[in-house]
View 1 (tube, rainbow, N blue to C red):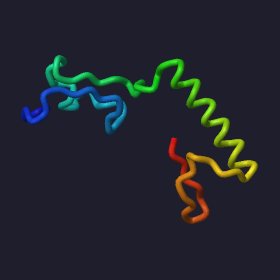
View 2: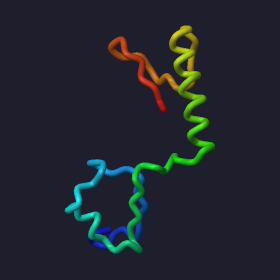
View 3: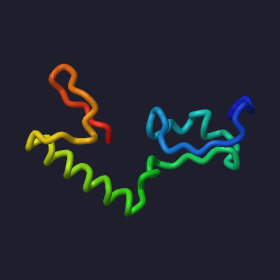
Length: 82
């Protein structure tokens, strides 16, 4: 964006979050860059699905059932794809 290799972008996540007020991204032409405050998944339908998935993940872990969101076991921790 800064040197013109990318025409435009929309960002839902930044590092750090929130951006520092002096970050160079905030000086880019607003027609070329849209920055959302990490709300890309903010629809009611998506939030409802996330709640259901979270509840199912908890039930599956506590009952020892397989779960499609468990990726692998490593160092006695279970990693989840959420």
